[in-house]
Length: 89
Image (cartoon, rainbow, N blue to C red; front, side, top):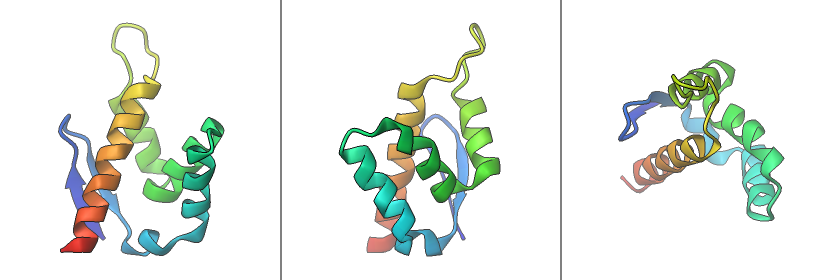
């Protein structure tokens, strides 16, 4: 298990086996093809259901109660950047 934290303070753990997960890769391919409904499945594959909920709560507006899609995407990008750096090291 690899642990990290985004710049905004979201702490996460990634199972190292996720780096070789074909279903996650397919989800990212779908995202790259413009299929945004693949994002929640990718987040679950990357972080698991409990951390997905924690991420959404982290990105939830105190004022409106809504979860910002752009903030979630930014956090996921940071998590993926972190994971790719871990692979290099």
